[in-house]
Image (cartoon, rainbow, N blue to C red; front, side):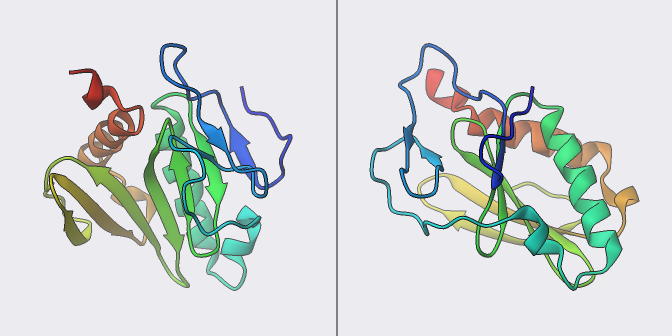
Length: 161
């Protein structure tokens, strides 16, 4: 169930009971696995990311968000330059552009997909993938599987192994 206590974020409870509670920044309300973690502290609105953008960009965001929400509990934060999705940690994000939506996923491997725009290796074993979407039909089953894979990382299930 979503709550709207803070108009700058939308939240479901992403923290399993067996894990250490997340630290909440007293200024912006964002949550982190480490207390006092550096971040670009600020309060931003989701709607600001869609000003002066083609209507398709908001449609793409809504579809992407829906696919992420299907994975399970998570929080959406609007930041200055992007929108992030967080389970226990941030695992996905979106960067609305004038005519398209760039989507970022954190994966533990380099993935191949037709919509991959850029991949960055983050040692020792992480990969930041940026996908570019112009039409909702481009969100295929293979991309949905990658969202689920990133969500599991966001839940930190890989640390349980």
